[in-house]
Length: 219
Image 1 (tube, rainbow, N blue to C red):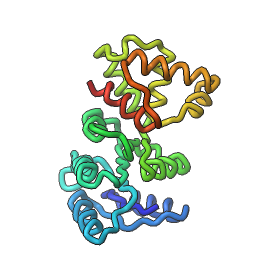
Image 2 (cartoon, rainbow, N blue to C red; image 1 turned 90 degrees about the horizontal axis):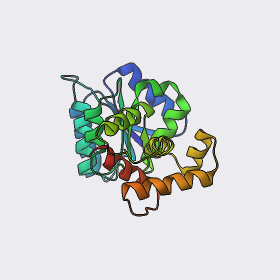
Image 3 (spheres, rainbow, N blue to C red; image 1 turned 30 degrees about the vertical axis):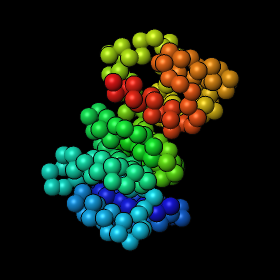
Image 4 (cartoon, rainbow, N blue to C red; image 1 turned 90 degrees about the vertical axis):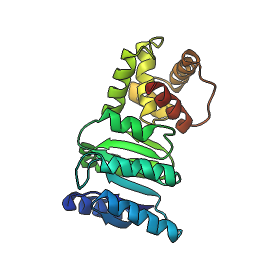
């Protein structure tokens, strides 16, 4: 896996680099601001050497507001084949919604606290690089909470909402079953009911499922 890291904290940037390289992945380069990130991606694209995934902080210089997420949105538009995983100190719904607009394939939004769990973080990077989804449970919880206020999911049972939340984190049916301590068959039934109640046609693949979930969360 080839990775580009965009993080203005030198300590964190070097730590992420060490963490990934120690596990056999290649960190192509590390940059400290959004301008350097877009420039680097442009240069790599010209060399036909784009990375598999970019890990970027939401807030970067010069204003430390939304430079990182703006760069991430640009990257998803210009180079949709590159996975984008953004890191944030807090859940910022506006940024999360903007990043997830359109398609959730190859995208992730994690709180920086998740980096402390090395295995979980590396798994998330690999998943996003492979075209999957990695959403922090806190992000999912807040988006689900906002959605409930809009009655989008009013027809779902509490258990179905719980399953939907885990689906939005990018979990497979087996992973959902393990988390809820139920059978795979029970989860499959819940998922079928969710699609039926939300008026969704059958989809094949977790990425399409997450896209459907987030499409309704953002309505």
